[in-house]
Image (cartoon, rainbow, N blue to C red; front, side, top):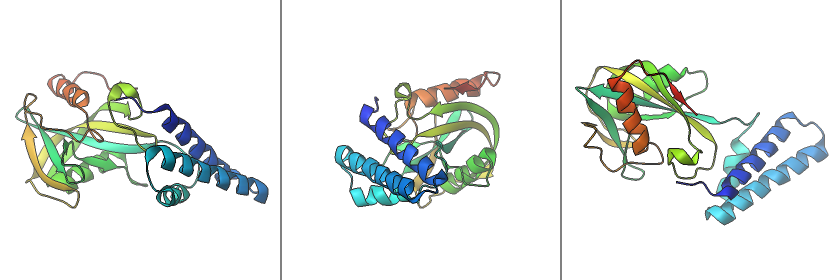
Length: 208
């Protein structure tokens, strides 16, 4: 899936405005960077068919030097099958995971997310892939921010299937049983590659 070119430009404008606000002390420069941030919100609202006020609030909440966000996903296997959770937001299945919180290691984040979203406990044993979500080759739909996705091979240690605020169930699927996916979070090529890492633990980490 190809990201529209305008989205990449708007992301860069928003990041430049955020960086400028993080380091500027001159009131005239601050005013200009605020105007640039509003312009980024207007462009994204126009072309992305989203409310300007919503985007303006989202952009205003971003502070400090702009960097890609981190999304950690856990590939938990049991008897050759992969744990997946049902996303309530779009009705598709995905690997359990989510944002890495400030002050939290990627390992802790993925182990926490797996438990919160699936009810299963696990131990992260290998960083299998570091993916640029915005890269067209990875097949994710466009997103408002630039982010990197961390995929960990995880060892199941306990727990039982459970639902959460965001997920409506958890189940294990074989490689030929993959259900309809929440491609905003996980794509089929990513899942296929994770099965390869599971079968061959000595594969090096894939990265963009």
